[in-house]
Image (cartoon, rainbow, N blue to C red; front, side, top):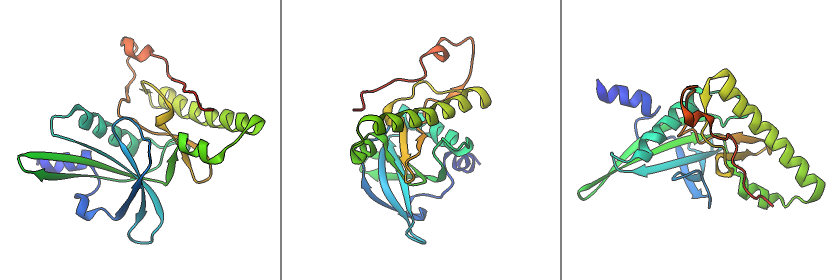
Length: 196
């Protein structure tokens, strides 16, 4: 029974062998300990993004990662990354057992890499940044006001860009229910980075 419940909470698949997606090359940047891979559907070859997080059973990153999977799966908004599938896989290497969480989403690219690729300058760059920040602020507002959830920090690595150049928020590992008496819920919501 416990294994069944863990499967319901942890993922929508039965393990890596049943993952209906091909895992491709990783991007050079991702959120925290996650690795962001290019991917494709085994069925029709359509592009996806695949995020992986590995560790041992006692690793706190895995517990936070499972929280991120649960939140991403249940929270729907146009400015939040669209969840497609998730699963966990266990590998044994001698005495060590390693768990890996896989999240499959719509195809996206890390914001930092998309900005370099676009090479925007001047007014065009400023307008694109303003539009993107507007999209992310709508996502944060939705999480705080409608879902009553608190996202500890929004940083450059927690923003990705779709094929249509829309900015989307993800990386919900530290997302939690709002508690007005909790000091950590009063932390700044947006941590900026130097982008130009």
